[in-house]
Length: 364
Image 1 (cartoon, rainbow, N blue to C red):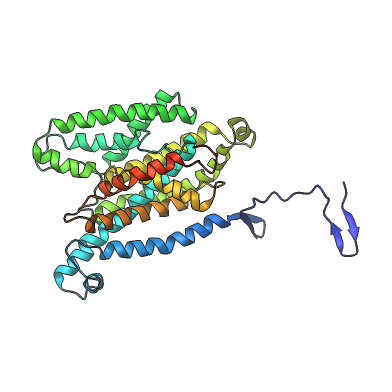
Image 2: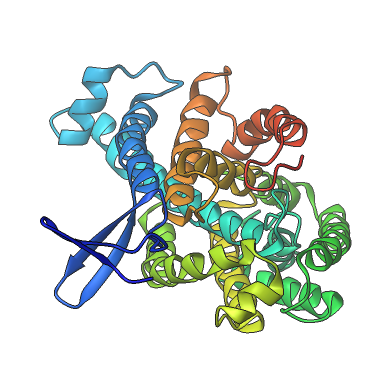
């Protein structure tokens, strides 16, 4: 069919279609063009001020009764030396580390959920967290100080666990449900090994390692956050690129392959990124539960079912960690580890996820 000519110009043919996704705006500059996902961008813009507000709340939350004016004075350096030390040297770096840990867990959860096509497929269930935990716990075996191993042991343990899961699932290109089932089995086995190691330690070592093993930001300083920040600087751009390609996994494998996607390489790349992010986060902050599960699901609700919300998951994960850390300092007479708070809140959230259908698939 040819175009029809009118006094006002040329009318497009009747069968011409606009291939631009309905939730996107095309931005062009010269020969380059870029699809801006409007809903995802709006969600990120809404999450940013929420993150700032929750961070400010976490900075002022205190079980010692420190007021807002004292906190501001400590932050600006105009308060008494003790307050300045508490705010600047202890609380501020701890919150910063928590934000980085939450962002890393959020992205890792987003990648694994999309990779497996299942909202429950988080690093927790794929053996990654347990592998990282086992490596750090094993390094502390026999210690008399109760100090856990170095943060870099987390990624090493995560890589080993992920390699076992991939082998059991028949390779990185295996179907998502195979990876999930293999991960559950490997996670259970590695968790049993960690429990065995813990049971053979003295009270001092077991107490120190247990506090870390439930997920805690206590004592985390800038030296703990720096390596995680460097990992995020390196891996977040790669995660955004992989996340864009992972959108094609919403089709079946034949359709995705016909669109030029190397499924094996894509799945392997997504798994490597998720393992590296989750392993480093666990090595720094311990195995903080449910953040990798909740952050992508909440981000998906905001961004819509057609996108892989990598940026939204990072921001949501950071918000969840900051909020849980603040709540843990004021909800009880003694400070609660952030992992305990997320576990308490994560149970009802998991039930909510199980009884609500996935908007992307329509399945429970």
